[in-house]
Length: 371
Image 1 (cartoon, rainbow, N blue to C red):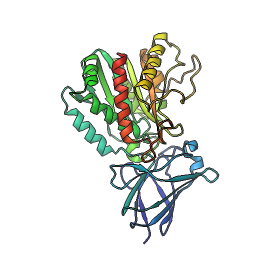
Image 2: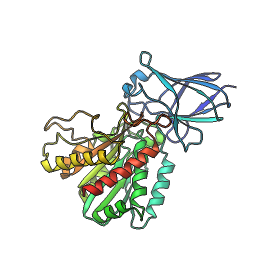
Image 3: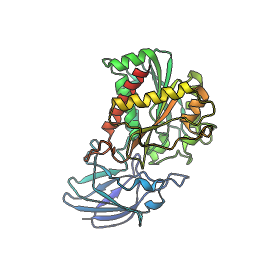
């Protein structure tokens, strides 16, 4: 029998160039109206015992070609538990090769464990029923999907948590699921303390169109939402426009923008060092948060990360720098790896949904300490 490959489902993305027996040559579809591509998610139907040989080609021109070296494909038989498969990358040809002996008649493969829009709606529905939680629809995406916001807490410190500006960074919404589980746990002492000190505004998915379409980085219009925060528009980026408008109403004291990084095998944060109105107090609080988080979880570190912006040279089209400048907030971008965590590797799962959720717990416990 010949294997069958399909990606016609929520967040699916693959182009089948050829199939011969148990071997296939594949490529990744670009984001709509964009040259970005890196996210893939597809299903292989096969026979147990088949020696499957898959080659994903054309990756030298992908958004982050440095992300493929040392990367291992995510796989699942039941779409619940995700593990890693042996994977090799030939930089000369831009080809990622996956070889696997089938243990089940169906095998799902993805760049990272997917977070479907159906799971998103289940998350919103379940949390909205929790005591003390308010749900708001801040606006709609270009394709008419809701931009959901969950609010809770009675304190005066305004905290914004938001994720999946880049839809292919699915670990960000797994982090959100962990954060919401912790914050709505009536027995959790950090959650009780935080709800007393803060008012939380939580947007688990800022880019539902890109998420459903299987994009890596952009919305329906091919726009990178994290380059729209200085001038969002209804035509290009209504997702940012409605969230920033709600932030203007509430104010922002602390903010975390949750992401994933293709190339760096570590968890790290990026800050706002280059904003024009930088205050010493902002910097001190941000550095203290980094140090406390590193002490609270070995999954976080400060050695690896992005280069710092020069004084006055911050890119204010990005949310973290825009919020720090606009509100004087302590804002940060949290990055998790598509690969594994170099300092604490897991040969079975690599970086995983489970670790993303636990990292959220650690972040919130750290915030409670900071406040």
